[in-house]
Length: 181
Image 1 (cartoon, rainbow, N blue to C red):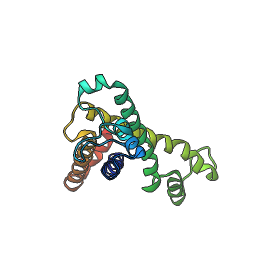
Image 2: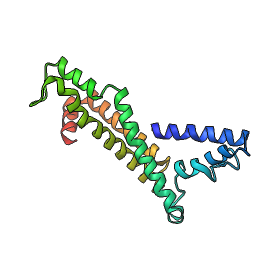
Image 3: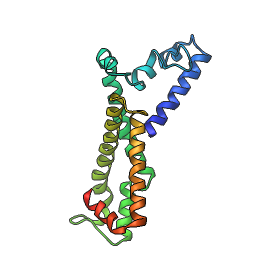
Image 4: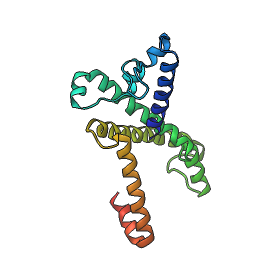
């Protein structure tokens, strides 16, 4: 979702600059927009942020599809790492929670908790973000309604509602759902 928002903002800036300064070389390298309502037809925005429009487009422009998929997946991975720092699940935050609960990592000194957790949490956040990126790319390539970001958002919302209903109606069901994961 964060990547989609960032890409949309780059689209908007590129389209506005293309309309305001159509003959500027830097603006044309960023993106060429024949019409503001249309999609870009050239430039970095077209190459890196615009996904293919069907299987035929994937076959013809396979290099662009591969580049777009790689940029999307890696960007989602890095956004996962940055998100971890801001939502309170960084290594320092987890180490603080462990210290507050008088817990330590077996075989490690309390002073080495943050570096030890850093080795585990950062790669896990990156892989998790990349996984969401792969899901988003796959859904976009398969032509899912609303694109890949829409699928990720819909699944997340559905799981939150299922969790809410289970919590309100039957707490034992929620415990069983936790065991299935």
